[in-house]
Amino acid sequence: QVQLAESGGGLVQPGGSLTLSCAASGAIFSISAMAWYRQTAGKERELVAAITSGGSTNYVDSVKGRFTISRDVAKNTVYLQMNSLKPEDTAVYYCNAVVMPTSEPKYGNYWGQGTQVTVSS
Image (cartoon, rainbow, N blue to C red; front, side):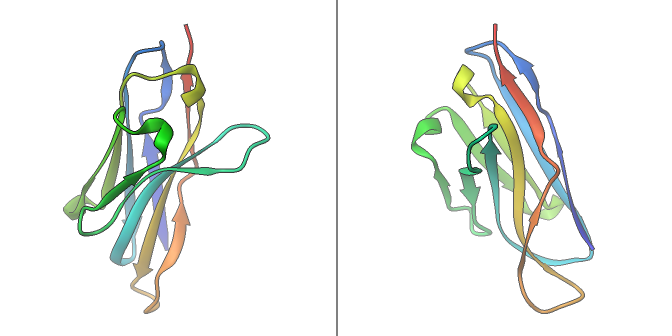
């Protein structure tokens, strides 16, 4: 069984910074890509940033230059450094990982439980 545990959400003022962390644990053989998504009420979940096992990254246009995704492969952990936060960044942020568990030789999509980020004065 594979679990993703997120931390680091909270309330921050506009212009402030937060760092989200997500650690994957359990019966993991290999992790391919890891990513952060976000969702607000009534809207579809959107990809914010992703990073491959080789370190290639991509970002949604609205966060480019403000957010940075990084990964510690040895710790099965992905981070999202968020700077210059705006009220429109307010959302529940979800960690995603493409994982091959030890129990079966194929990759599957796994999600964390989500962490709330609120940007407000």
